[in-house]
Image 1: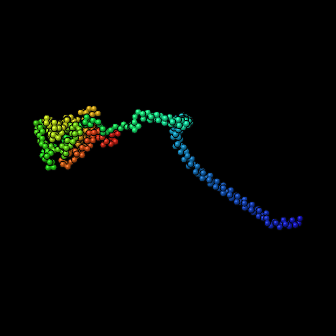
Image 2: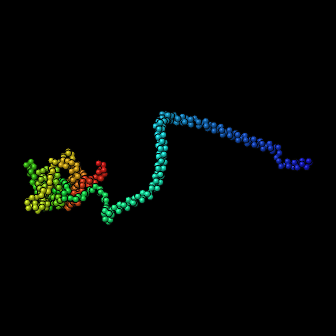
Image 3: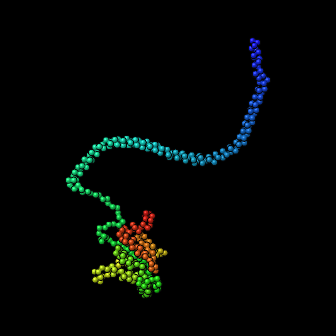
Length: 374
């Protein structure tokens, strides 16, 4: 026992004393108290801050609620409610359609599978039947016609712009209407400029209201050659905005120079000269519009729309053919340029137009998108 007490007393030095325990407990209590006080201070500061911030935030919240109260309850929510009422029946319809489509799709898949299975099973028998029929047809064909003979099926061609007529001689000739002044000729009432050649100049005297006037008329370069060529393809007519007293002497002069080349030998022997221009139209045949001018209305002389498909008008003034742009061929006006070749340049196009079905199909292409707007 004594030895045990000695051991216990020797171990007491390793443990702290009671005073030390008291000091440690006091220190711990002070630390805890300090933390509690600091927490209280932070809480008090937070409450103060909340008290300082709450009035402003509450005012803003109240203002926002007041602003959005009326639109929300008077516009937004009623509109949403109306939209739901309108769209609610459609949701059921769409669901029914989806269900029916799914059912139909499943039925089709089943039918396709069954049909494909049937076709696969029937294919050998069908092939055998076809081969037997072909054999019989070949046997019959060899008995009736020679084995080397063959037949062809030609698809009918589309509508042609240029028909292949079997009787081109009997084909109806198209009409080419020519302007006079600044298209075929140019006239001056006082003298002749030096740029003109003497061979293409003609002098005519015109009397209007018992007043005579002298005009010097000049042909456009290649005028005679142009008229000779187009007379082979078209029925030529003259349509001028000039008066009859002025136009007739000029037209007669043009005809007298060309008709010998167009008259056949039999007609020459009989003393018959061919008339180059079948018809003549003058200012009295034009439609006058104040502020615009004289317009050449072809519908007066070709009342049916079907007739206009075979009519071409050649003029230097867009106003003249304003009512029939799809029938018009434009040419630049000529005064005294001796190097002009516009009449020659038009010959290939005019020859092509003489062969087409409807001249408007070709001439309307220059209008571009306007053709498709009609």
